[in-house]
Amino acid sequence: MNQGRTVFAQLMDELPQYEFDRCVLRYAGNKHVRTLPTYEHFLVLAFAQLTYRESLRDIETCLQALGSKLYHSGIGQPTARSTLADANEKRDWRIFSDFAQVLIGQATQLYAEEPFGAELEQAAYALDSTTIDLCLSLFPWAKFRRRKAAIKLHTLLALRGNFPTVVILTAGKVHDVNILDQLTYEPGSFYIADRGYLDFARLYRLHLSGAFFVTRAKSNSRFRRRYSHPVDKTTGLRFDQTVVLSGFYSRQEYPEALRRIGFRDPQTGKSLVFLSNNFTEPALTIAQFYRCRWQVELFFKWIKPHLRIKVFYGTSENAVRIQVWVAISVYVLVAIVKKRRCLSASLYTILQILSLSLFEKMPILHVLS
Image 1 (cartoon, rainbow, N blue to C red):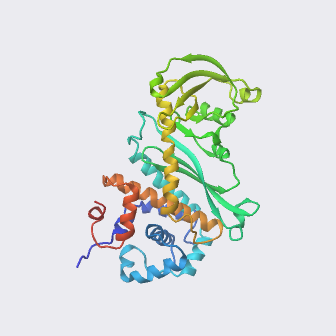
Image 2 (cartoon, one colour):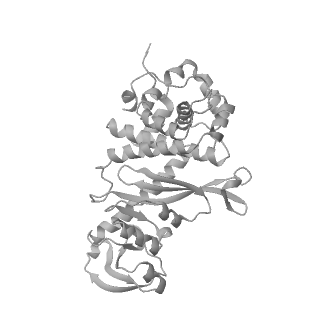
Image 3 (cartoon, rainbow, N blue to C red):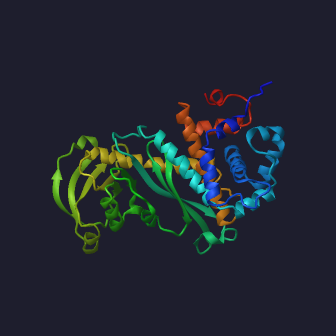
């Protein structure tokens, strides 16, 4: 009989528990707690994420069924659903948010040299949001429209490794462009966003920070051309221009020159016009940057059905935030394990394997290989 540790325990060994304890102390997460310490709370929710549990009752039943395997996985005893519900309601969600940022920092270092589909030495990020629909009667704090509730998951995705570096959770009525005010920009890095983030005053602040942006122009944007540069039209490029804004207010918001690039996709025939403040990279590279933005769409398309952020274990804002941050932590942890163990399988494949073998007593590398 295999007397080794469970795959779940080996996976949780990759967590920097010292950093987690610091986050707990920062917000007094274990004050007056008798039955469910914060780290065990995290483990239970991570178990629910990895095994796709649908409700608190589902979590409770499965934990009871595992018996002695729980103790060898770091979970002291089966958690009652009422205990877990109280913890989700009362424990400070910032503990899990801060710890997720610690994991994101580790992943950023691991994937610093990872290629992402464009020839670029600097870091590159894609910015977008996804809306998660909720029931207004159960989630009144997340009012979106008159008879509808929703939350928005604003995500800044690192294109090297495809993991989130910034996640901001807001009510559904918050416009995407407001998130630009909450970001800290890295000088020399590229930020790629769609037309929903086209605000020249905010983009000028990004420009002054030393960072670069790539976005799409709106059809009603007004420009005055200064220069036209030659392009190879066989690559899909149509023009490469240096322009300035000609609208009265937009010129005051962004007084410097912009780069305007026209591109027709050879596969779909769709014509696109890009704006950027970078004048050194080739025009075709700028067009490839925007194509890489699709990675954040694929991230949302993947994370919504495969991590538990469509079905919530609580209805309060605190409970929803805890669940989202644990989901992000689990995703980033798997990305860290994939890089550290030099695994060739995709994150989707790894998570599917873990969901079936989480409490097997065998080496994790053997399972994931």
